[in-house]
Amino acid sequence: LRCTLAARMEAIGVLMMCPMNNYLEEELNKRFNLFRYWKQPRPSEFLTQHAQSIRAVVGNATAGADAKLIEALPKLEIVSSFSVGLDKIDLTKCKEKGIRVTNTPDVLTDDVADLAIGLMLAVLRRICECDKYVRRGEWKFGDFKLTSKFSGKRVGIIGLGRIGLAVAKRAEAFDCPISYYSRSQKNTNYKYYGSVVELASNCDILVVACALTPETTHIVNREVMDALGPSGVLINIGRGPHVDEPELVSALVEGRLGGAGLDVFEKEPEVPEQLFGLENVVLLPHVGSGTVETRKDMADLVLRNLEAHFANKPLLTPVV
Ligand code: DGY
Image (cartoon, rainbow, N blue to C red; front, side, top):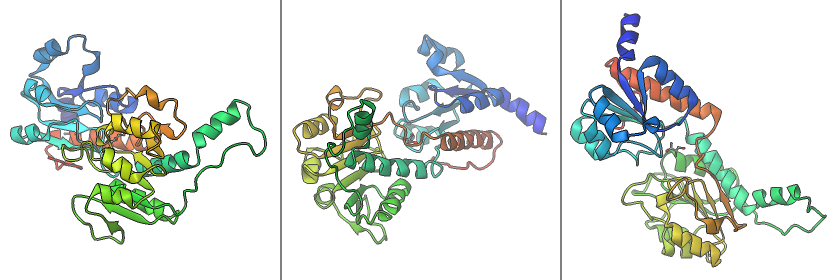
């Protein structure tokens, strides 16, 4: 029975949207009939040619399944995302067409929350700048400017889901009072604010940890940044479009905002060049979940979801 199942799976067309993880790609290739979308010189011809055999799409935080792709694949049954974020998948279209959707929650929560704390420390204690200074051979005793203390700073979190809560838990260990904004008030010991501006006015560090939706696009706008103020720090571990990037650049350049730690950008992998010269920002290439251990767990979740679907078993992490 196992052999028949494996043989049946090998015939199933799976479309991987972009390079994401070598282990995942190898395993998909072993188990299914794998198509690599990013290697197709003429994507629309490719889709027409293979439309009848592709039954699954594997996407990630940068390339998912939009309405056009879904419409082009009439045999599509499942979209499995190598990410927790679902903003690159047209969920409405999937629901309409009865296409299942899975993602990779939980396994990456610790890594993303760890990185948020790393960014807070890096920005406030200017870790990257200190490192460059030592490497340039400029170290003389007592001449590096003093930095800002992290312990005890008031941390405000936008979105108190799994990742937001994990950030809160970690920040509490640094004696940081926690407050938050979310669509609804949660039953926690943390202080709730009903607006992001209010939250920003009452914290030193504002962390974006919510999902990207039309409602949360540019949730951090000029008003929020001004409420955070010249000593405030913005940490974005969510998605680039959560923040109005041109406004962020102006706020940082004009000194209306104290600093920023950014793992995500509006038009990745493009990063506004004005940020390169600023010492009060730390810029990361969207690596929230980027550890060997977690990426392996995420890959296994994608594989197990696909296998479960094609074996008519319950999905491990169903979204739709
Ligand atoms: C996610 O899973 O959505 C992360 O952004 C990927 O690192």
